[in-house]
Length: 284
Ligand SMILES: [Zn+2]
Image (cartoon, rainbow, N blue to C red; front, side, top):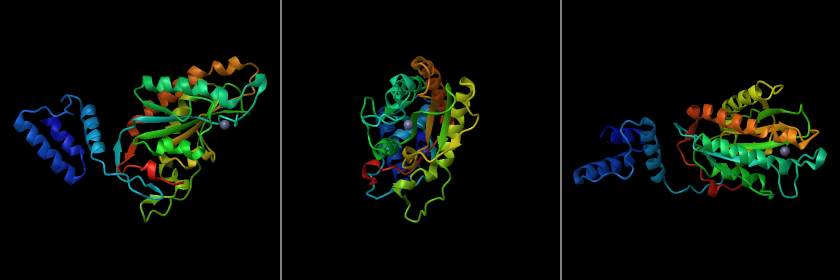
């Protein structure tokens, strides 16, 4: 029974608690095994079950013209949205040997996806081929998820080759939150401290792996980050100006592993907004 009450304690809505209590009592009386019962010894599994129950009981998406602000917190980083930047007619930075950023970054993203999956994350790529989703489409992939973070990946045309940097959006005043909604183009603001935490952890891993990389993250206005209502960073690799393409290829496993390790370190500190983010109803 301990785990069942553990689940109840993890559910904040009084109404939902009552429904669950009735369901548990009913199930116990009937000798029925509860579908989402989990091993008693697993605290993590209990939390996961509580989350999935809460998620299943979530109210219907709210119709709004903004994004719900994060309120009280709950741990649970589940999904990483990886954004290989550019694509389609936008090739991004162009370098020697016909290297184009949009093409080269795909292999970094695919390897990073695998490394993250090995850490237990679910990964969504904003593009898998040579297409070019809009900035808002890319952000919306993260905004529509619960428990997501967003990483946009770039290859610079400048910088010391063989290094990598993490960027977050600069500080901005918190939006006026009277309505509980955040304007689309300020979506990142409430998540900035989490973005910085995640970015520091990824940068630490990158600087260990790639000598000459900065020790700390930097700030820059990056378009994809501004409209993302989730912890969000940009990872930039130097550079398309390498003498040979193989110099970039050799960085792929290290970049993938560094991001995966950074996110594994970040996972325990991640908080999910209690109010679901209605990605589908958000209008840019
Ligand atoms: Zn770029």
